[in-house]
Amino acid sequence: MSDIVRGVRGIRGQGVMERVADAFGIPGAMLGLPARPWEGAPAPLSDVPQGADSSDVLLVTVMIEGRRHVVPISRRTLITGAVGAVLPELPHTQVREFRTPRLGGTRIEAAVEHLREMWHSLVRADNIFGPGHALASVHQQLGILESLLEHAKGAQRLEVLRLAARYAESAAWLHEDMADIPQAVTWTGRAMEWAVESGEETMTTWTLFRRSQQATTMKKAAQTVGLARAVQRDAAAHPTPVRAAALQQEAHGHALGGDEVASQRCLDAAHGFAASPETKGDARSGHGDFCTASYIEIQRATCWLTLGRPDRAAPLFEAGLSSLPDAYQRDRGLAQARLAMAYAGVRQYDQAAEAAGAALDIANGTGSKRTLNEAVAAINSLGVACDSRAVSSLFERFEEGRVR
Image (cartoon, rainbow, N blue to C red):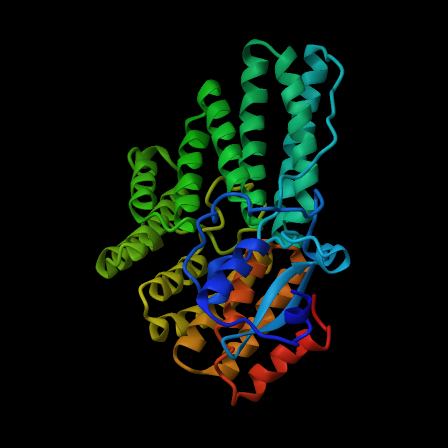
């Protein structure tokens, strides 16, 4: 492997590429391969330290079938030579167990109020700085809430359950952004359990929406559509941004299934329930407040990309990015990576290189593993553009060590 990293030898043959991907936990999409059997579960032979973030990942260029590719390799791999220390997915975060002392009724109320206010700050921190900044804090607060659940009774217990469900859903989202789908699914399930026990129907519905999103990530079209429709069953009981979020999510499922008409119909309908463009990104307005008109149009662009129409996707990404609120850096990074894929699809390689570089900068700045994975996939799609100076310059950033 060291010869491959140093450029002494290249990788030839799909079998060799598959062995490299499986040994180092590299998603198939990054190397132009089908999804690997282990994707959606922890990467095999993983040996990255607990709590690793993007600073532990080095991006290097290798030659595969005569084309340049970028692959993420743990710095630990290069130091120790341990196969499997490469991570496209973050391992389960290890958080020191915290046990809160038994509190009386008044102190439980004060603790709940404090944790409720902290949650809004954590949501904003996630949007601005990425998941690595917020994840440890979310798990620490979850430890406190689980301790409170051991003591709280009656109406107080219901309040703690509702807040615990909110934190668990946030933990799921953060793990998902760190490309750890198994933990995301686990915490979504915990959020649903607590929401059902507390009778919090809005949160129960929202966990169905989150499971639909996770199904999209795993490219399960029928499950994506089914769960999104389940969210809409009692539409009148939900805030309008939740309905917008569910409709655009259903659109993704239809796009995965190749149904262009149904996908576009859902996106058109979502605009009728879109959140205010003045959203601050801290969810104070309730679930779905991220689902603004510009967000919906970015999702429309993503659906066109899924449907194999990069020509339709590129201008929509451009327009949506121009009006996306500043708070949503993670969404901006994902949109830039997908814009790069759209440009590559219409052979506008210089523009693709610029968009991919912007996505990579956001991924490095926020620590978002999901954004990093999509940025790397976009960059690798450009390896064929040998005559583009912009693409060559982008790859030179890795060769000269100017990016992680």
